[in-house]
Image (cartoon, rainbow, N blue to C red; front, side):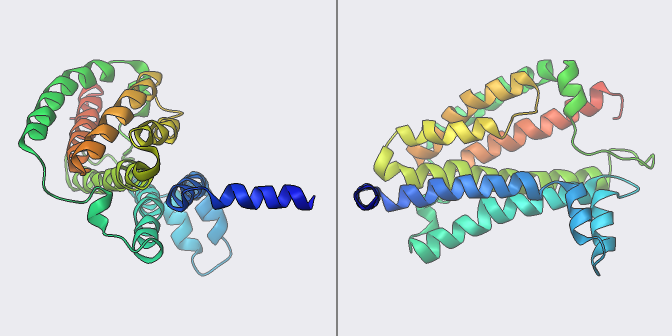
Length: 252
C-alpha cells in the first residue's frame, strides 16, 4: 500500500501543474453548469426560503422564458469566466491577455473571418429548414402574444452574446492557452472533446459540426492568441440561427 501511494505521489510530481488545474477545473465547472442551470431545480432549491418567489420567477415566468435563460447565462458566466479568471490571476498570477484576450489581430485573420462568415450563413439557413433545428431554436419563447421583434428579443440576443463570450473564453482562451505550454497543438484537440459534448441534446448536424468548429476556432485562438475572431463568428452564426428559425415559423 505504501509503495503504491509513493508511486502515485511521484507520478503527480512530474505532471504539468497548470494543465492539471485547468483540466480538473474543466471537469468540475462543466459538471456544475450541467446541474445548476436547471431552472426547476432552482425553484426547488429556493422553495421554503425568502427567495422562493425568485426561484418561481426563474422557472415559471408567465410572459416568456427570458428569466430562465438569464439564469442559465449567469451560471455559465460564473463557471466559464469568473472562476477561470480567478485561477489565472490568483493561482497562476498571469496576464489575461495571454489567455485569448489580446486585441491585436493580424490582417489575414480578418479576411479569413469574413470568408467563414459568408460561407456559414447559407449553411445555417439550410440547417434551419430541418425539423430538429426548428424544434430547438430559438431558445427564447414568448407566451403572452408579444411580437418577437422587440425589446425582449434584443435583450435575449445581448444575453446570448454574453454567453458566447464566456464559452469562447473558457474553451478557446482558458483551456487552449493553459494547455498550450505542455501539449502544444494537441491542446486544440483536447479542448474540442468537452466542447463537442456540451452540444449533446442539440440537432445531430450541429453536434457533429461542433467538432469541426471546435478545432477551427481553437486553431484561430492558438495561432492568433485571441478569442475575438471566434466570438464574432459564433455570434453571427447564432444570431442568424435565431432569425432564420423565427422566419421559418412565421414569427417575424
